[in-house]
Length: 72
Image (cartoon, rainbow, N blue to C red; front, top):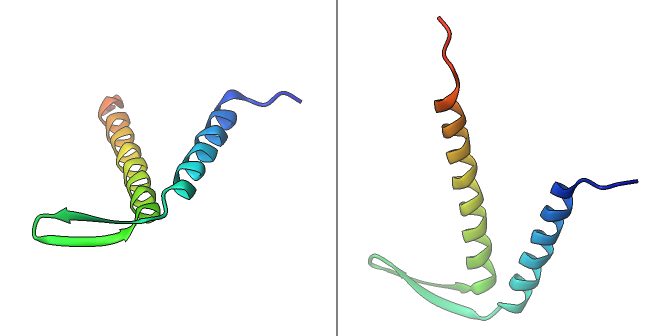
């Protein structure tokens, strides 16, 4: 049985992300405008990755919608 390249690439990316998350568990403080937030770096990286995927997905949807031909 031959696996397609896309699931393999996704699996490798997920494994690398999990390794990075597990190695970064200490608490960090970051500043957003007037707020100072302290949280685990594990959570910070996880939220950043999720937000990045959501933004990338929305940009792809908007680009596909923009390039779609319109019929009258």
